[in-house]
Length: 99
Image 1: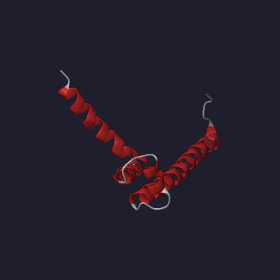
Image 2: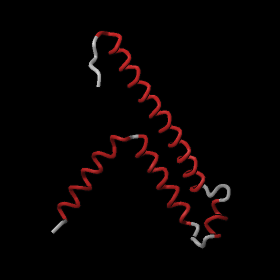
Image 3: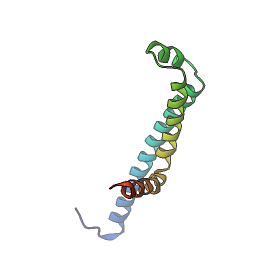
């Protein structure tokens, strides 16, 4: 690891950090958008979702369950700080019920 000396090196390190953040959020938003579209399609039973589910032998209400979980997953992906308090609550609940 190199030491940061002078303003030139500080700016270079800041640009790398900003680039990583922009790349991370770009990929995250694209992924969340595609998952959200898939979830909405399953909730509306759009496209080949009905054929696919019936061909493999599942009831149609599975599409509602999967679509809802996908939309909840999109919220968890886009709001990463939401996972921390929920995880803490789950750990407290699990630890309090342990014998």
